[in-house]
Length: 224
Ligand SMILES: C[S@@+](CC[C@H](N)C(=O)[O-])C[C@H]1O[C@@H](n2cnc3c(N)ncnc32)[C@H](O)[C@@H]1O
Image 1 (cartoon, rainbow, N blue to C red):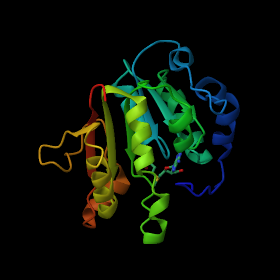
Image 2: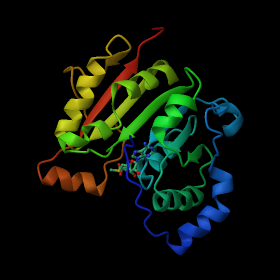
Image 3: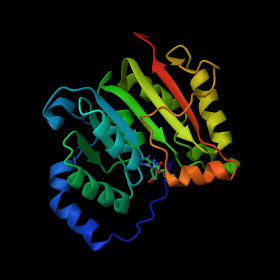
Image 4: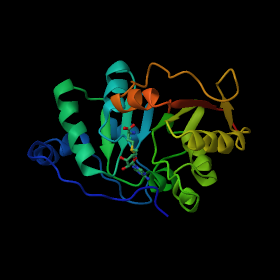
């Protein structure tokens, strides 16, 4: 069961060139079922934050520029979005980002060592609004178990969505894992948008239409 439908979309000429010339610099390969050696891949042992489904990479670019003392691993399956981000990474001259074109569920389950990540971001995941599609939502009990395994104690999980029923769904699933995840919301539900996450045009439009984004911020508890 996949959380995405692969619509190939067309690469612009610049994006196609970026795959040829920039993928070797920013892109990673993964031999299935073998955990990535993150310090070796980044060439240092800075803390690593993963963004799942970065789209065209707007948030990833912003975070990587804001926190040069962290490494960012971006996962996306949609090639035009990856091409877009490759070009942006080169113009910004950032070197703390690596990208993988993989299904995040497979990578979380088998490609990351325990306690290897300082944080995981999931911004505007596909909402799968119809009830019969809820099983395709990426946030599921198994996903949360994998998150708990790969996050270091004290590490964070930051999610955002403008689909209110999905925000409630995530909250409910994370509350069910409260032995491992602590909600950092003072009201016990959502948090104001942290400055790490840039507000997009798409999101401002949603706000005008009365569909505000909701942010969830949880901390991995120590040692459970
Ligand atoms: C609605 S878009 C949001 C993109 C971006 N985060 C943003 O805020 O604009 C969701 C993205 O998640 C990606 N995605 C969904 N499931 C995924 C998975 N299992 N692994 C990697 N990427 C995934 C999709 O390809 C899509 O680009």
